[in-house]
Image (cartoon, rainbow, N blue to C red):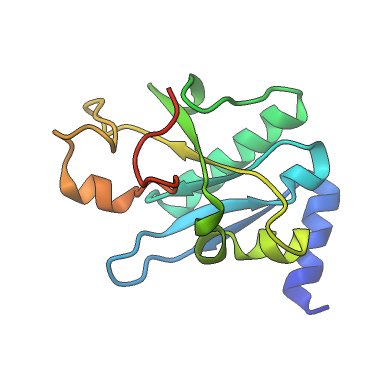
Length: 154
C-alpha cells in the first residue's frame, strides 16, 4: 500500500470519506468526488464536475456530513444547502463512467459494486445543463454522467 492509499483509508476511518480532485485536462472539466461514503454509511458516493477545488471539496464534505446524519438524496429531487442561493439535484452515475471518473472508488470497492450520484447545479441565472437554452460551455463543463448523457431523473 502506498502513502496515498494509506491516507485515503485513514480519512475514510476518521471522516467517513476521502475527497479526490482531478484537474481539468484539455476540453475535459475538472471534478471532485468522494471515496468511502458507501463503505462508511451505505449511501452512494458523490461526484461534482466543473467547479473549483475548494467549492467542490466543500460540497463533497457537506454531502458526507448530511448522509452521515442519516439524510438520503434521491435523483430528480431538489435540495438546498450545497451552493448558497441555489438548489441542486442529483443524477445516478452510470457504471460506464466509473473507470474515467471514479477510479479510487473502483480501487476501494475492488470493482464497480457501488453506487454513485452526480450533484448537478444550475447557472447563476437558473439554467440547468439539460436546458436547451443553456450555454454550450456550461454543458461542456458539467456533462451528465448518466447512461444517456442527459437528464434521467425527475
